[in-house]
Amino acid sequence: MFNINRNYELAENEGSSLQTGNKYIVLHETTNIGAKANASYFKNNWATTQTYVQYVIGDGGKIYQVGADGYQAWGAGSYANANSPVQIELARTTDKATFKKDYATFVNFARSKAKQYGIPCTLDGSGNGIKTHKWISENIWGSHTDPVESYLEPFWGITHEQLTHDIAVGIEDVVEPKKTFTNINNVVTTLKGNVKAYATYKLDGSANSTTDIAPGTGWISAGIEMINGEPQYCIGGNIYIPQSITTFKDKVLINSDIPVHAVNLKGEVVGANLDGGSAWKYAAVVNVPKVGYCYKIATDMYLPLKYAQGSGYKG
Ligand SMILES: [Zn+2]
Image (cartoon, rainbow, N blue to C red; front, side):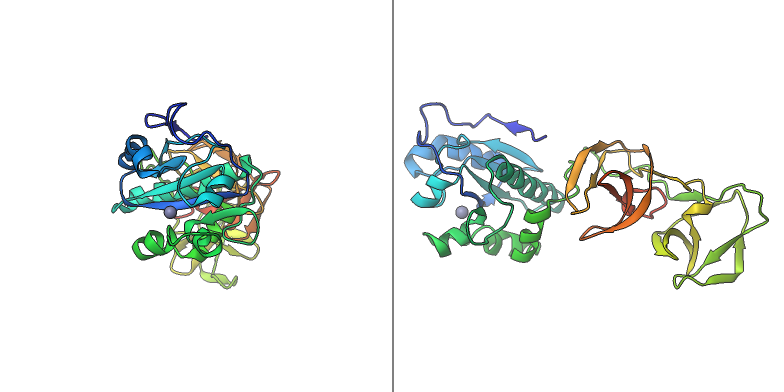
């Protein structure tokens, strides 16, 4: 699931040979730019600086391994070092697109390592869990305030509350875009059915008495809203048509040419990637907490509306 670059991994005889307890995953930020540069620095200076961690993440979602999982790293004081099988540094960047990939990987990788070691995906709570270096400073030892106060919040507006939420549920768009969304198709076509015209609706659910539309006609959708209990496409100012009168009547088509992820009812990313352009039958439309309305495409598998053709989503 994650690609790990091992070019700067410590050798068998480098770093600590002491194994850790499994209480914490510790989150840091490097204070300077570039994951590769930081991983290389750790590799070449661990002995003189007495500082390194297991992973450095950055450069557009890349993951560099330095120390070994389950063996002490030197990043957060003796107690935290002895009880954290994994400590992770987020490298800085000034580029927004790079940051988005870095942050998603940072969060999802920390969650993955926590699960591997039976550590709760709870940020800075009492007991075991994922901890900011600041929490370690305030509750165990040290003075560092990373990664939120020093970087995430002042540079990118990611508050402690936001990080806590993201650590709890993961970041949905975990797939690293090899390219940006293209071939977005927001055209919806009414069924050819045996009718003269279809009614259209307003956002409040009432019918637009003067704006009926013909069967077999195509419309550009600006978005999807839940109206009268079903998804309806916005085809003009306060003019909506039900999905059930279109060729998307009983299916959704993924609107991108790159894979996307579905979520479960808790809003967590689940399952394999769904191919761009693929078609899915859906059983219902469900409001998933913190994600919003989603098509139910399998048992406990929900596709956010924005990934459907006709959603108006532009990537
Ligand atoms: Zn730190």
